[in-house]
Image 1 (cartoon, one colour):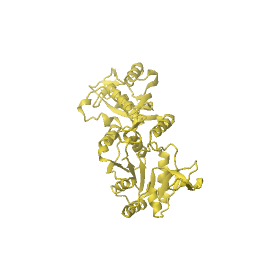
Image 2: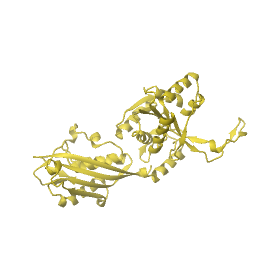
Image 3: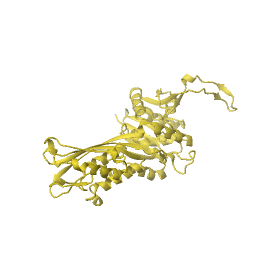
Image 4: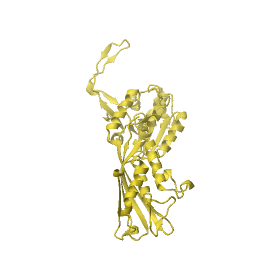
Length: 389
């Protein structure tokens, strides 16, 4: 069973007072579209981005800049939300039991928990849409603004996205609605029109749709107080020991008869740290930014690459908070070099040295490290989102 996401990203920014599509707007240092796409990566097999053609280069640039390696395809937005969804549905070829999630990209704070519950409901019942129980009283009025009825509050829900459906339910209904000229304000409305049962599950009050400037303030407040503002990353790297190469670890040249083999200076410890930093922010890995096929990085100091990695984080709204590195090598002894290593790292990333830990250990002559065939390194770090802009 595959899971497809139809990401609706064809909106404009007029009500936000913007001259660009609001999905390209930064929220706490990261664009709306990247926040939305990133939320679905662990759960979807393919994502269709439905957008205006003129916005596509900027969206692609955002995806590439953030290192999102995922099968994205594009479909053109239509004159209405319903037509945009249909364009997205017609760009895929799902099996009847596949799950389709339809999401407004402007809801960029959607949580993994909500996505999982929508998928579970769609698998079990064929449908699943998130809703928040009404807390206010609503009135139905006529064309003259006189009240005609008061719905029972316990039956009312404010509906959100993503809305999840089995493929064999949503696709025929959407095609039929297009033929019949039926327009609905959400995808579930089409099923309701054809008397197909739709199941509501509990939504998330943080799943805000960014429509007006006040919504942006609410989203910023959620992010500032949310655990998503703190992220943890882990990195690991290995390089082979060979003659006639310098041994450089954390930017320090270590006197030794062997050095590490690699395209750059093969600083295994800094490579592990850079991967941890990028991984914490879901920004790919060092190979995405500094490939070993690029001659400009041949022999380059990994301290320079670490500086560039810190800048990548900064550009995406993150700062490194602390790092813990373990270097595994049978020889040489590294203890006396560690203070210099920590200073190099702290200076490169621009944080106090007391937030940097570097440790060295052996494997008691076990494994490739113990046989002096190579050196490995592990790194764990935390990064924090910068103040919202």
